[in-house]
Image: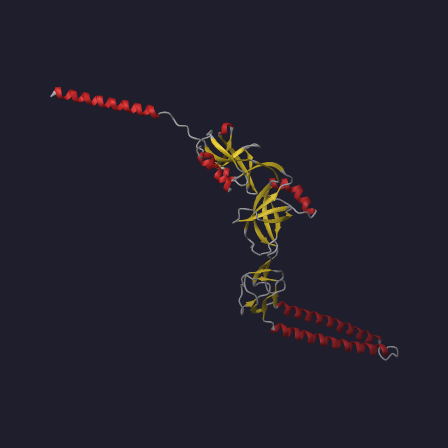
Length: 398
């Protein structure tokens, strides 16, 4: 039994040794590492441009004129003449109050004026007669003086009656509530048939639509920076341009001018209120909308601009790959600034003449990796030629 076991074990050891030698031989034949070919990428030179820096704020759109429509006389609301939410011109009839009582008051006031004028005529006749008889001593001087006082009182009564007639006419006119400014009418708060009180009942609201104000708060440091130029420009009626974007807009499509800077800072918030005016011909900018405002600083400064497509994120840091010596991709941490014409300002991290990788960054696995660069314009890194460039650079040579 023993003699049969040992030859079998010896054969197993020989087989294992042969297998190990075969594996070593195989590894020796294919052990030479194949160098990875450089990956094709698109690079673009940073754009050098003189820019005027902008400071961004947040604010709200407000109407230039906002009116609460309240009646100046009381009575029953007779009719609403406009559709709620519609645009109305100045002096458009909006609401009317039952005016029968006020028409009667005007008629009565006119009668009082006629009565007072008749008394003036009578007093004037009595005074003239007494004045003619005073020479013949047919009347005394006291009677003449009394007739003169009666005439003066009658004339004063006419003036009082005319004032009451004018007041009655105004009350009649106030039964028609008209638009004091052109704008958009709000919801009707009172329906016809309800009693309204003078100066108390809110009928509706009216806001002007063109132009509109954009009100925002500026911090103290910004106020000190812009104070001299803005104050001088406003006092000289010169335009201080601003750019405005709404909440659903990424670009600042709207233009306006700064027209007011408050005379004091809020000591609690450390800010100062500023106001810009902006045209709204389409009447689509509603008061209360959120807006972002950019205010241009005085003067210009040189800046480096890159396409945002080249920017990568590492936690809270932004970085790009720059083409270095030997076509090696080098990482550069950057600090981004404002957006100008589709490009972002690189406030730090780059130098003039740097070649930034804008396409093919996913092919770079570590800093220092060799790449095959193809130059493209920074302003259009996604053009058809730019898209084909990395693939052409990576294609093996025939």
